[in-house]
Image (cartoon, rainbow, N blue to C red; front, side, top):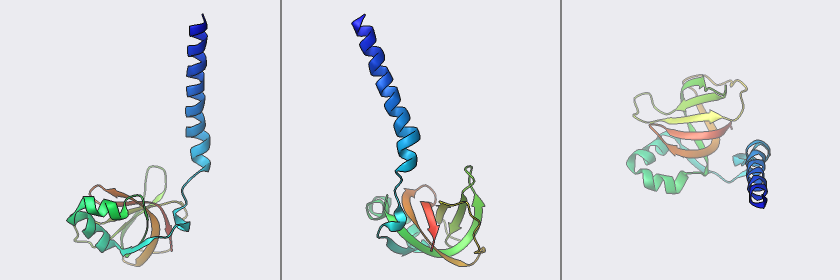
Amino acid sequence: MKKIIFILVFLFAISASFYYYTFVYSKTHHRDAQTEASLVITADSLSAAYQANEQIANTRFLNKAVEVTGSILSIGKDQANHITILMGKVDAFSNVSITLSSSTPITQKVGETITVKGVCTGSLSDVIINEGVIK
């Protein structure tokens, strides 16, 4: 009987910890990349660095605050209704995809140059920047 009670208490503690971390702690303890010192780079140079050697680019940029400047190729929205911006060159194989932290509409248009600061999370076919804020 004591084993069953111990197991139930243990499972409850694990469940309560998981719930707290997922729904309470993670919502109030976000990383604020906007206050961090950032690496300043152009969108073309960032995507070229990842195309040349992804491992070296990851050591320089992965999970770091970056300030990226480039030409807007497209503006859209993701599934969470956050604004996404694709920056780079029209004819490039890889560009920089940025998800903004705010869903407030932006004033810049396709073709204009923009600077965005966010956190680099690596590369899929494009280099991914999250938590972006327009500078």
